[in-house]
Amino acid sequence: MILTKWLRQAPLAGYFALTFAWSWACWGLSPAIKPQLPWLAALLMFAGSFGPSLAAIVVVASTRKWVGLRAWLAHCLQWRIGWGWWAFALLLPLAVMSMAAGLHIAWGGTIATSPASGHLLMTLANLPLILLLGGPMGEEFGWRGYALPVLQDRFGWRAASLGLGLVWGVWHLPLFFIDGTSQAHIPLALFLLSVVAMSVLFAWLVNRTAGSVVAALVLHTTINFWPTVVPVLPSEVSFRAYAFVVAMLALLALGLMVKRGAVGPAQGFVEAKP
View (spheres, one colour):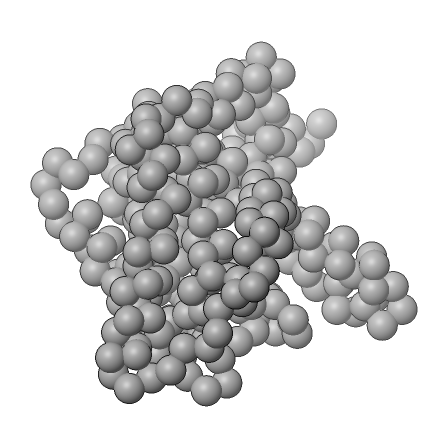
């Protein structure tokens, strides 16, 4: 097949092309058909969010055959990463958002009532939904499972995490023009800065856990989950609390990047040479 041959010749370029083509096509069609078929529009929004992981599966299967695909998935799904890293991935976003909310209040701002107030069980029930449908499962096998190890094998982890962060941010771009998405209410510059900073943090965590995508899945899930408890996302009144979150993430990322010997590349999947 022409596609298979192309992916074997240029797997990384093919990965990014497939990711953007699938996601942007789904997200472009969704608003157009929403008035007539709202259920299909919602399905396309979810399908679009799976572009990175689906593209990774296609590329790995094309370049490494089914045996390589199984080995890659087994490596990605390492879950024995140590309780300390589980706690880090679960609680770091909560700590950052809580400090940002505190700074916002100290500067005279107000925080809305927590969406979880009076709905604790329902909020906790959202955790698996966020994991499966809210971004992590659809993205992390691609961004951190495939693209990160390939990029850092060529350029080192710092350049790889920064470059991947820019790509990750641009990938979200259509969502800023679709009503009802969280990105539609976030200043683009702040969002891009936050994604690049988070990309550095994700790369550091994945490398520290020997390339485990499970660690990235947990961190991505909690990043999306904790704002349902600590309301720091931008509102019509203010986006200062969110700006504090972004500033702290940027400082954390900068600290990781300037520290010598902070992390080395994980022993993960690397694309097959053509």
